[in-house]
Length: 377
Image 1: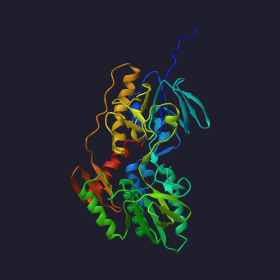
Image 2: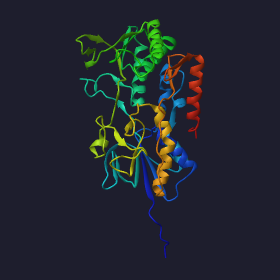
Image 3: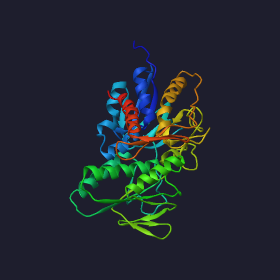
Image 4: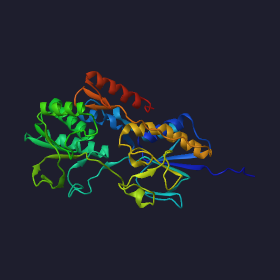
């Protein structure tokens, strides 16, 4: 007579973001008995966003700043399915995936990040390249470099978005072209605010303004892009800009399928979560990182929160299966911001504190490499 074997509980992790890789690592070190864990991600290699500017600039290789999800899952004893989630059926506790049969879950966590909100810019879905998904951007950037290496014509690169992502990516591209290629290019940054880096203190803003001026980089402030075609950006003030390569690095937008699946989302489409990182409408669903809207307090879309949510998420997943009390996520009021300037130089700020120098870059590099070393299996 066969011994009765109870059905394993199903934990599904959707997305290979910073929080989920932390959860997977902790699951490897502390497995959950009786729990089958599955990760679903469209990519085998997930990038660490903090090192993206360094990759663009040429300071890092692809391997330096990408985590191999398939290898990480195999090490942790977790199933890995490569694919996109199209929809959730919360009533059936089932995921619908592209090119894969439906996947059942008892507990679900979503860590799918964000992407620039370009839906209101005519033509933006066809022309220009969003900074996220990062791997898509890197592919187009490399192809453009290869194309321009064969051309002697002057190029014009336009980055739309004056926040940290836009500033760092532009300076990384500028450094790469000036120091490792013969490509001749002019650069323009378009921002909707009256200052670049509007969430940073005045000393940081002034430093980067001087840095842009020293590199002859044009800044257009207080301006929105209305539309884009194959050759030009049309601005809201009626002017136009010719371009050869445009990067969208504007404010974060959400993927549409969580809201379409019936999860409660904020006005921008991000999944509303409580202090325990649980969906406010479905307590058996967690959401973290950029894909979540933390209802106790409005949080900026910053990788530092996703990294720190990982351990809280793991403990709350464990507590949920054990039917124990959950622990709240307690975000810092202010966090350390480290911004690179293209070369081996960076700026550090927290509140009104401001430092800059080569030593800041090496400090940041140490922090980033230490994080990545945790996932080199």
